[in-house]
Length: 419
Image 1 (cartoon, rainbow, N blue to C red):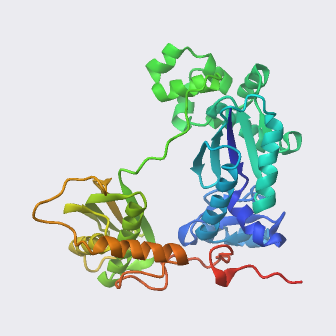
Image 2: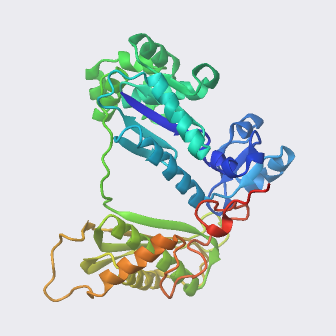
Image 3: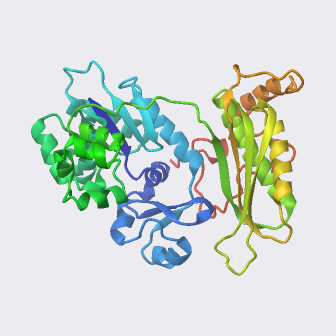
């Protein structure tokens, strides 16, 4: 059996854990730089606040309806997500973290378990230990557990937020209920093609022949079809090292001077280097991108990128940052107001197993230095150790005018209890 555990309105729920006065209040969470709405509580949805709404256009609407608006507090959300995932590992060792608020679980050797009770145990423990409400769907396959989860979320009073598909009757009823566009793995274009075939529900989809699906789609859609039929075909994903690592961000303001851009690029490059070390990898190539604000048509536009090939693989923040800064300097154009930049490291190889160069190699002092920096930053969390050309006050310069405290990751923001 498989389970999909989904945290309900996760970002809003994280805000409510430490501010109980927000319970039953409409809440909206904004994207980077306080741009658009990326998460809403059920109350905000019912009022009519759309997903993706630009806040500068909907600010008056939020004030009129008393919608509480917050900047994205990723340190808080990431820490709360990690706590939820650690709790799930107590119920089974086979856990696939699907997103910040979702996880698939596989139950091997649980043949005689009552999954309704087991699902309720998971939900109650997460709620008690973290304060995060969840919906849980349990079924014989991953795709069916997604369907079961949607039923649990849609009908919380009838299901008590836990629904188990454990019979053929329940499977068929669930497939007839869910629309084809709501099936996990079927996007807008694919659903449009299927509707031309009079395939409007998941049940209609599984009635198609295997040969027709393979001829008109791909092996991925065929696997999804078999999964919906109750035949386990989609397995839990194994954690694999990334083939490329990117850090791209929009600036808080437009920059037309090279010094500010060099500082941002250095910070992005350092982030990529840290991610490389975390997965014990090194890179051969660095790609640096720089672009102006495409939305301001009245200004001169410029978009450029360049690639740097390294003579030897490295994960040193010093080397990657230095190369990235030199690269962005070469594509920088004076007089342009730049809004976005990014660094991508690719050509990734294992740090402990790569081709050596006879004449060029990394300074042997870099690796112990990087280990010391990573150790200190992990211990104190707030990235106290940085390169000299980085901004020492903040990691990302984003507009966050509505940011809530980082209750669980910053001792200065720890919750105060009034007795």
